[in-house]
Amino acid sequence: MGKIFCLMGKSASGKDFVYKNLIVREDLQLQHVVLYTTRPIRIGEVEGLTYFFCSDEEAEAMERAGKVIEMRAYDTVHGVWKYFTADDGQIDLSRQDYLMIGTPESCVKLREYFGADAVCPIYIWVDDGERLARALKRERKQEQPKYAEMCRRFLADERDFSEENLRKAGVYGASESLKNAGADAVSEGLQSAANNDSFQNPEKTSGCGCFENREKEQILADVAAYIEQIRAAQ
Image (cartoon, rainbow, N blue to C red; front, side):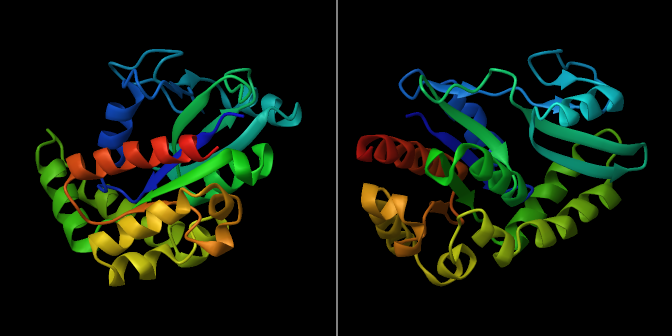
């Protein structure tokens, strides 16, 4: 049976970098899942590749038909924009493994829909000061920096990635263990989590892949190794 690797991390944690590099690796053969959104298409985006763009009415119709696996709604200055994963035939766990970027909330919904054994949470933790510095550096490069929105996302992450929400998503005690453990201790925890019996019973270990405050290239290598360990343990 295939797996859905759900990559999670607060803003400026490096999860997009990790995702973009993993999804193109031929040896991993992880499949991309195109999400749906009700927001307008942006310059450079491609319908069916970046997102499937739909209206609010189309999203509501898919909900009524039971086709929406998980949905997130964001209240923006332009109105409420929705992003969601749909049961539209893209995901076939009898044939493939998949890599998705999500939040603790969306990971919970995926686990409820496909089963906890089919969804592997991967959580990237980066010190708040480092994330804020990265976000500020990135925002300063924009033609029209949106510092207020940057701060809003930063504060929203504190709620979305609370210890309680992480536990619900299968990330057991990650915040404290990553803050208090060094890289070697975290690596040992990942090795035990890759054991099949421990992975099936997350109460025995962290129940997920947790990666702490290191360079993005090292986190990328560690996440790739973790995915390979999970596959080997099946």
